[in-house]
Image (tube, rainbow over all chains, first blue to last red; front, side):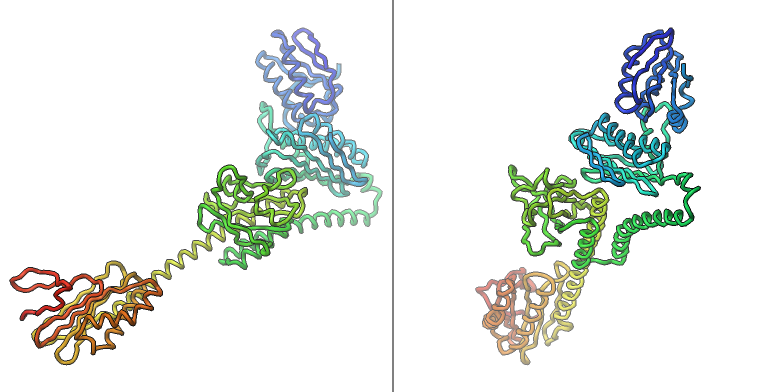
Length: 101
Length: 502
């Protein structure tokens, strides 16, 4: 699990399935690393074949943090199955989905 | 994951500690198991998410001791459907009838939504120490099967589905129909010991129990007594609900006092002095307190002759339902009994009043130179007091006043007997003292047997001499009055009094 700062964006990647206790750990790491000039959080789901409601909760929690700075949570490399989950829970409009870099 | 058992076919059971990492590991095992059975990718994805959410749920609601209890996941695959059962030991939660998607900004509440959306049915059975979440999803028929299999295979698949559905429906119907029949019998006013025993045997059968003991308060606040049991061969004592401090309370008393189910078995054995130990050993089961409104009606103990097999949530529900319904019926029967007893007392008093009225003279004698009057007013509805005036020969009158101790029919009956005896011996009328001695001799034995007594006063009037001879057996003194003199009591020393001309 790693974070990278890129201008006003904090990237987090290299973690496994975004579910259960792992989702909470990612959220806690991002919160601890977030600097005042970070408006955007980019979560790379490249290695996440699977996301559950714990993962969704973690993303919403991060969204609440950055939306106060007029920022947003961006999701990169979401698989079709994960995209379906966001649609099913009507959260696909809350987050920005960005294609693979 | 502490244990993993897998049958070579279609069923896998996993027991794991109650934490998110362990349930996530169990979810991966379920994914692998389904994958090995050839479940298609889209179904696999849905079931992995369902299992993960069910596991999250079991952990989320656990607290305290429940966190030390394992979570069990069991998944069954049939040609027509897949079913996941997750057993937890948490206090549980209320499954809403309609599971809605929470607000987008809400951080929780999506687990149930996902499980219900991705499946065909979701149930949550709550027990005292175990709950079971059941999620079922009908399987999609693969395209290639549709294309390649004959109509006969399709029919066979449908028949298999129908068979499974029929079996499940039959099991549910059996339980429900028992409850409906119970309700119907309740509405028809069924009751009594036979009714209770029949329904408790039904409860034992439907609830999968080996034995039962029903204790009732019978309106008492301090004890519960056996009303009905499948073990009538045992002499189960009355249980006090205020046992002395220090001694362990029997499970039935605990349930009655603390107002919640008390479970016993291998992990929580019965105390040595517990009357349920008389049933046998080993034992497992629970005691359910039966309340009607806020009042305790009794307790129902059910169990098995083993210390390991707990009742499942469905069986617990059946036992609770039938016990609680039976409690209502027994309470109604008791209210009805009290009402009838009240009616009986009223009726008895009416009869007694009729007897008493019939003892009083309708018309008093009117001897020349005398004027007689009488009035009786009972202190309560009915008493055993009466008066009478009997002509004795041509020149005598016997005045009688008596009071039988007590009220109601017994007092009225003794008054009638006393009156008959008095009327049977006019020859003794002119000697009231002797008459009372004779009356005492003939009535004493009967009165003594029922611990009753009669006070009486006899006054004989010689109409020619106007001489009044009086004798009293514990009755109030006679009061006399005459023009120009004070009203006074006649003392027993006087015994005789001369009446002035009126």
